[in-house]
Image 1 (tube, helix red, strand yellow):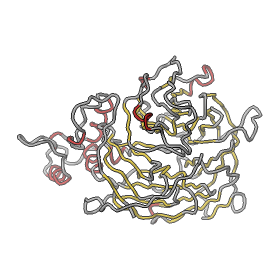
Image 2: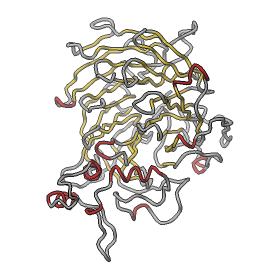
Image 3: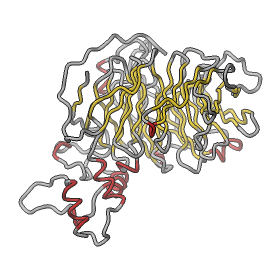
Image 4: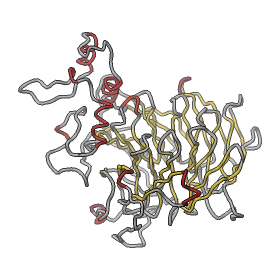
Length: 474
């Protein structure tokens, strides 16, 4: 059974306190977020001005799809077709909130779930050493059924190579394994039916048991891997040389997440349990060995970062129960890594609720652009993302939550535009199809669920949801 909620919840910090975001049409750029990204989002997803003129004496309303189609056929814009922004405006109105239907029911907690860059493949990784790759274009047929090797506790991350020929998977071990998913066999049992080559990230005679990998990503050219580890470091692995080429002592605590800033691959973003986000320029790794900049604002550790892909903006999930939007131009190059002590030191997000009094606290030196609140980040490293550029112009952000739901926020206004409720376990990961209005949520209840836009245009009738208890986890 499922329930979809639509509501509003303003983001805070850098937003002027006047009015309510619910008074705005979804295509209107908010006055509340006085920042360049508001204008950039407008340019990507607002329709042509001849299709969005206000009617005198009437409040501003969203431009309907019918009006857009009439304008296109009448060549109101003079172009005879939709622009990319027109198309994004139409597509972004159709939020994937209907359903869900079950893609698969797995036998253990699902930790990772992601579409490939072109949306043709979908990868799901579970605690029980199991990874499945589905062919989306062939009715979600299982293309590869992988039983992982040398797993420690759980699969922490997976990543497809840019050519979609290889998959890497990581766990709480220095060894990341790589699988050829282009082979003919469907079943891939590690070193039984197929070879899962181990890529050892330990350097300088590190003890094999000393650290694990929380996050791993391919470079855009597919020649390198970047990884975030529990020994406070970022690692670079050269696939052509088959060796770990660089270790950077990056933070003062576990590095939970790392990603590339853009397609150029020179800049990296990282997030750590030291409460800091950092920006790294790979061209300066060897000569300087320190971050290009530090961004403060979270009161607790960072669980995930996702880049907007422009080398400027990214978002992060934090254990302080917030998602933050960052502009790297606000970073401090020589920042004192100052984090205030605002709660009891014995709090542990893995099995304790976040202290109610701490939810209203703010970092006195917050460098973020704005903050989104409403979801819950407990018990595991819950992930957040920008919505796809092609279909939405990245006008939304969305995140899993430990209250068993997926939350979708308007990037500019901060409004909570939809909550997807279905699961009986927390949702650690979720993925929005790069082309179509479709979201996949994966949960600790083992269910992989597909949400789509309802044909009737109406959200499903709310029903009561059963919840199961959430157990302690890493």
